[in-house]
Length: 461
Ligand SMILES: [Zn+2]
Image (tube, rainbow, N blue to C red; front, side):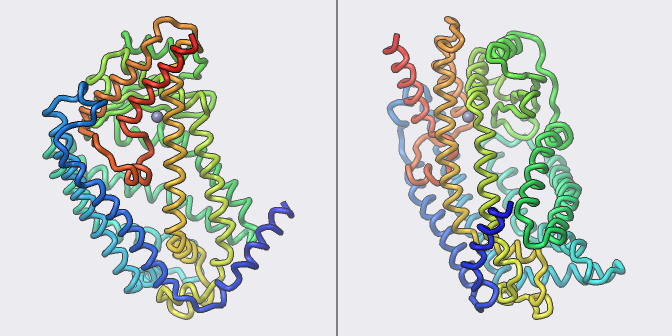
């Protein structure tokens, strides 16, 4: 542990200037965040003309009808226009909040509310919780109309929306309540660790974050998801026996197999698994089962089980721990930095002894450009995992010595095409736009990949 702390202390020495130099952090954050927004808008403008193409790529032409292609182009165009508008709108709102001292105002308002409740401002953790929720509620209001428009106008127009206004409001209230019920204790514990461990908080906080993530793995499917969707055990039949037999052959610890009423809100479709290493649950969207044949859904699950076989979720979690560690290792330099708070309009008496939550929030804003690069890296890793999972499905016949699985690649290809066509997903994709935004390879790339995996296999025989 001492080795860790001396390493961390070294980092702090290099960043010592943060706590004394009057740097104009606000200006930097404005420049950073506008740069990211302008870059993302540029990507949208690169992608936009592709929605005017009148025919699909050659590899897809046999699989997608003229009408479906035309529909997906119009849907893509509408979504791109909306994305550009909402991106610029949100950036203007965020930028104005930053410029006019919104965060400092929220901290003061939280202090006032605390006073009305009869507590002094030395209750930092309580004030931090009030601060976070005031900020969360107020800053989500300006973008609320955007989400109403997206659900009830855009998705509605293209036939995807199944959400009613009552369901929409119910979801919103529920998600606010959950954010409070989970967020308040989380935040209290998070801040308490800082108070208790002082500047040696890094290993303790890491331990706490990992435990919280594991707790969420248990709570999300059992407590949170059922508040929004209904999970019912998948009924007996061809699909159930196919999935159970596949899971059995791979020694996948399948505990429950569910069908989820994804169609309650939208007709977009999917399948996924979750759970602890010794007890897993598979969830299949009702929409996926309506759109594809059982043997195709089985191929989708073969791909999902490839993610499990290669430990992709565990690897992703390890990467995210490393990410959290880097952030925490850099943070102490920003924790006791009055000039940082002063540059974001916090009054002198607050800046003199910076509240941890405020320092952490401002620190995260400063990290915006770094986070953009990290998300590009994460997407690249995720796309690599998708390849591996597709290859896994294609090679199952060899692994399980199962003649009946020899067309798994074709079945997966057909399922992907159906998913893509029914979801009206974008067909033509700009490479830079895709590298930045996509966690999955494009459909054309995946179909080509499936073909080459199968050709390679055939050669080996
Ligand atoms: Zn996948």
